[in-house]
Image (cartoon, rainbow, N blue to C red; front, side, top):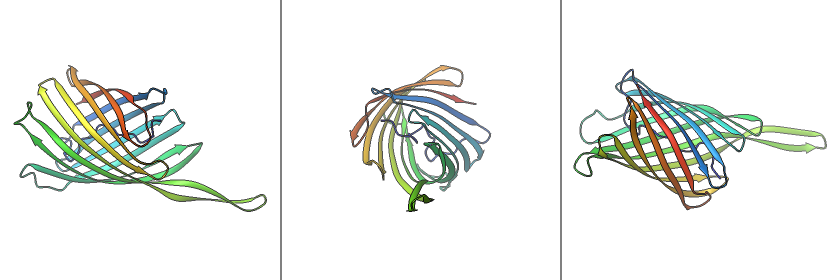
Length: 224
């Protein structure tokens, strides 16, 4: 089963260049024909600030939207880059819309002495979504209220650029959810330049631990 709020491409700790936009549209589908479609967008507000939008829809009648703001913490000196972000949004599930909030921390480092150069990142997130509960206090009398549903994620990413027009990306995705417990997935993808600022991404996702089915991913990137 593909879960909503699936991972998307992200800039990690690096701010988007001021005035520049990044867009990614992707689809993941597993062998049970469960499908997750996502749209990811970033816009550079300043040298230290980036704003982003994440939209997602799963076949299990679940749709999500998250608007976030990221700030770079380091001074640009040295090899390490660090940033933090926070976001708010909503999830529509089973005909009900509930709020969601997220905080995240990001670390990254680029390198150029191996396999044509590349980068490594660690992205951690804590997301709190409202969960609607209903209690029957008497026959015909019920009370509905929101309770927090918390999930924690960590993505460890290694990217290589063996050629100017190709990127190879490997990612270990770790997640702890209240409903499904701990899970780990290994994802690998190839990103190829196709024309101008456009790129295409092809990848596979394999479960290592916990719930999940192998899935294929296809996506497109656009920077302008």
